[in-house]
Image 1 (tube, protein in one colour):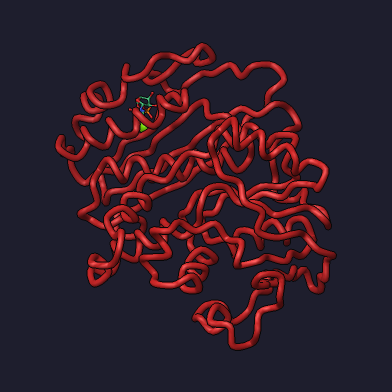
Image 2: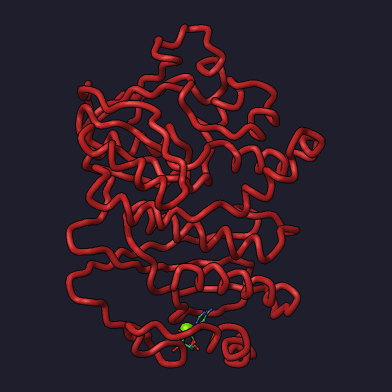
Amino acid sequence: MSGEFNLIEKYFAHKQTNRADVDLSLGDDCAIVSPPPGYQIAISTDTVVLGTHFLAGAEPAAVAYKALMSNISDLAAMGATPAWLSMALTLPEIDESWLTPFCDAMFQLADEHDLQLIGGDTTKGPLSIAFTIQGLVPHGQALTRSGAKVGDWVYVTGQLGDSQAGLDVILNPDNRTKPFADILVQRHFYVQSRIKVAEQLRGVASSCIDISDGLVSDLGHILKRSQVSAQLDVSQLPISPETIAFYGDDIQAQRAALKSGEEYELCFTVAANNAEKLAAITQKTGCQLTCIGQIVAPEISNNVACLELVRAGQPLLSDDPILQAQGFDHFNQS
Ligand code: ADP
Ligand code: MG
């Protein structure tokens, strides 16, 4: 786009301290990095598009934070430590009042993770941001979706449902008068990083995923890749008092916690003999870790894993409001 070089120089270049492993950053045809010996590189790309992932009026700082955090969360899910970032930015125009807060928020979050912007591409067109993030993980220690074993406990970090409640406010103005609406919108945009927890889960968790599509769906990926089933107790789901007040009762809040995407919490499994290590991880990171279920014997047919929901240890009755809720008519993960 015209003015591209000025734009790169003004907004993207020389904004961060150079990481020692970055040999060549913005300005040449490629960036050059030197990964430390003994480490593997974890790589992930995510795109956010105006109208699909955020609305036109969304604050640019919030857009930057959410777009980058969804990428950071993918590294967390693998137990990788953030290192390098590339950004493909498509802009309808060079709008200083949008770019400045966008870049400030992006660089602040990147700096907090010692994550360096090493390159990218800038084009003219409908607003979209595609980040490619790369992280480092000691060889062989990446957390994958495929390691869950029968008997392992299922855990989640933090609390579930806040992001969904915030989204329900953003999408439906009638919800603005509900309790804690403003706080929940903030939590939707500014989810917490789980990188510190993820680093501690290396060698402890048997499988891990970040919750970007919803717990039922994302735990389903672990089950399918690990060829196991799970029993999940909805009464154990960690839900904030604000989200319970927003939805008006526990069951509606549990329903939100089960289906809510974009929570960017981690769902992971731990062998029973490793579970005692989790208290120390909570102490070290300040992150709540909650056991919500257990991996059970695989009842797999045709590559379909089964996620059974219980409430306080009892099978859900067929008239349980969670089962009646739209979108929860079946729990098999195909
Ligand atoms: P080329 O035409 O060789 O692809 P560009 O003009 O697209 O080069 O980019 C010049 C330099 O600026 C490159 O080093 C590229 O990585 C960097 N760059 C361009 N756009 C961005 C961006 N949005 N974020 C970070 N770096 C960028
Ligand atoms: Mg280019």
